[in-house]
Amino acid sequence: VAAMPLHRDREKKESTAEEMEAEEHEQEASSSEEEDSDTSSVDCERRRMECLDEMCNLEKQFTDLKDQLYRERLSQVNSKLAEVEAGRAAEYLEPLAVLKQYLFNQTWSVTVWL
Image 1 (cartoon, rainbow, N blue to C red):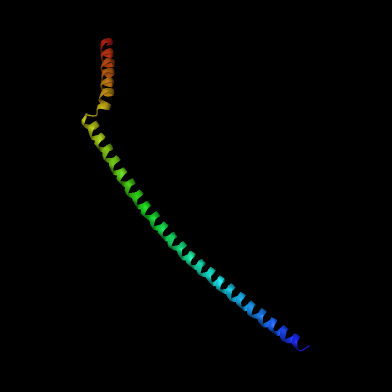
Image 2: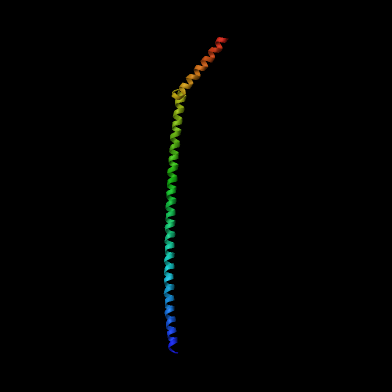
């Protein structure tokens, strides 16, 4: 009868040792998962900051190009306006000639009938 309690005690110690090993393994795995989570969180934040920096850079490039396009277009419009004012704009000279001819014809018609 005395042998049974020793056997039970030994089983109890072995199961307690196994339980402790399992708990340590779980803690190590949990700790590893937390480290992975922390690392992945840090990587995620670093990547987010890189993306924000890249987005700011792209926005600045876009603004610079938009301003450059505006200045070029404004220069073209001012140049065309100067041609029109000087009477050298080809696309306006022909319609102006037609208009002047019409005005001449109308004026002539009125003078003939008077």
